[in-house]
Amino acid sequence: MSSRGYRSRRRADAAAATRAAILSAAEELFVARGYSCVTVAQIAQAAQVAVQTVYSSTGGKADILRELLLPAINDPNVAVTMQAITATDDPREVIDATARGTRQAHQAHWTTLAAVVPQCPAEPAAAAVLAAGNAEYVKALTMVAERLDHLGALRTEVDLPRAVDLLWFYLGQDAWFSLVGHRHWSFDAAEDWLAGAAKRALLIAPDN
Image (tube, rainbow, N blue to C red; front, side, top):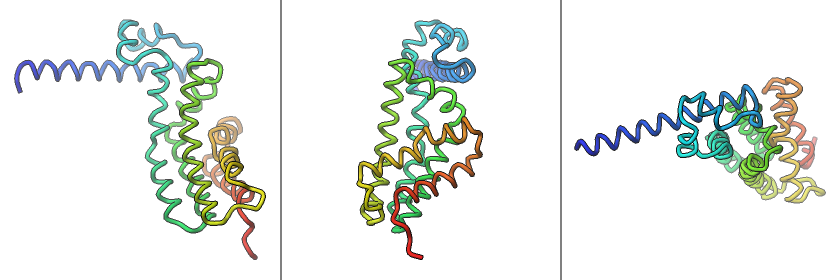
């Protein structure tokens, strides 16, 4: 490697380390103090960099929030869940797989999600970040609803848009925040109850 290439690599490595330090500091502050109460200056101080370095490396608070939520939005459990629902013709298993996948995605990132997401609607920039993430969530649930519809499993009164709404009600973020975060259910208990409730609300009752 040439000396110029070596210097370029070192600069890239240093920039990546700085970016990681900023994101880590921001996450710790958001969790400890709340997103709304943290300033870019405080993030810079915690990461031991200049304020301008924060902006040039990661952007403002909303940009940092987007970066912190990306691992949850792009969680590999989403792809695994989509594979599972297309691999089965049992509508009950479709809902079980969805409950399992959404549970795993939330549990893997729970500390950040539970501390930060509920505060996002209070700030327009953060609300926009959350809305974009929720749009991806709804897109995935729409695929689940379409699978149930394709299997002819939806109750007569449940059309496709309502199926998406019911999946969001029972398996969306608020459901997990309510039972696990607010009422302190275990993830196992929440998954079991939410999956059962979603089946009763969406699916044609099985023949006895």
